[in-house]
Length: 362
Figure 1 (cartoon, rainbow, N blue to C red):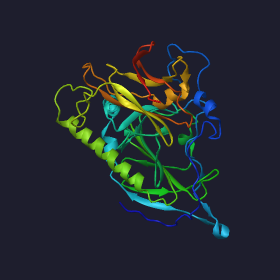
Figure 2: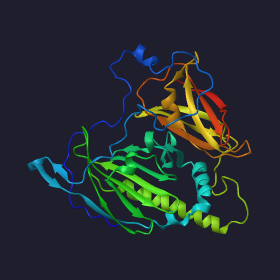
Figure 3: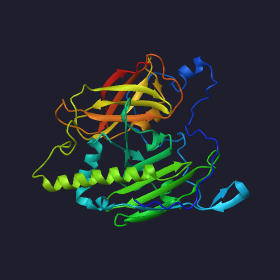
Figure 4: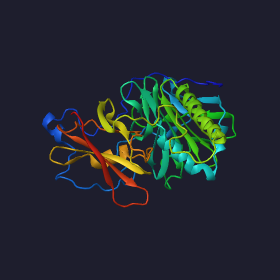
C-alpha cells in the first residue's frame, strides 16, 4: 500500500456524532416510557423503507474537496494514492450472485440488510463484549474516527445520497492504484474532519467505503479492503474445489454455525441498544426484532425493525444456529420489564411468524 499525504487537517474540539432521540435533561419518568406505542400491539407489519422517515442522521456525505483552513483562511487539498488488489470483486458474475448473497447472510462478520432501496452487506467487527457487531447504518466509531464498509448487491433507489454525490471516487475491480480525493464534511462540528468515499464496482457486487477522521490516514479503509477481498478470494477458491451441492453454511470457518441455544441478548451501548444472538429461521427470508413492555406496547417499533432487519443464515437442522445483530440508535431508556420478540418473514410469504421472545434484562 502506498499513501501519499499532501495536506494535514488542523485540530479542533470533537463534535458528537451520535443521534439523540430525546434530551438527557428530560425527567427520568418521561424517558422511561418515551417511544412506546399508545396501545398493545399484535402481529407486526413487515419493515418498510430503510432507513425509515425521521431516522437519526448518518455522517455527512457532503462537503468540499477544496477545504478551508482556519489559519489564514487558505484553501488546501488532501489526496491519497492507495495500492490494492481488488480483483476478487470481479470473480463473481450473475450466475454466482445468489451463492454470494447466501454466503454473506450466513457469515457472522456480515450483516445483510436493506439500505436506501439496495440490498447491502455491512462489515462487522469483533468486540469482546458484543461479539460480531456493527452500528446504525453500518458505521463503526473508534478512537480514530468513523468508518463504514459494505458490499452492495443491488442498485439504490433513484436520488439516493451515495449514488448522486460527486464526492464519491469511482473505480473498477481491475484498478490496482486508487487516486482518492478527501473532502471536508459540511455541517456543524465537522470543520476539522476529513473524509473519503470510495466505490469499486465488480460484475455483480460493489464495494463502498466511507471513512471520516481528524487525522485521516485511511487505516480503516485499507484494513477493510484487505479483509473483504481476502474473504471473497477464499470463497471463490473454495467453490473451485467442491463437487456437488453444499449447504448454506458449508463454506464458513470451522465452528460456524454453532449449536449455542437460540436467544437474543440486549446491551445498552454508547450509541444505542445492541440486540444480538443466535437464531435459525429454518429457511431463507427476513428477520427483525421488536421490543415490547409488560403491557404489550411496542418501543420504537419502526426504528427497531429497521435497525435489526437482516437476512441471516438458516438450516433445516434445528441445532444449527446463526448470528443475528443490529443496533437501535437511541438514547431513550428501554422500558422496565421489557422483552425482545424476533419475527421472520420467509421469502414468498406474506405472513410473518415469531421465532422467539426473550427478556431484555432492563
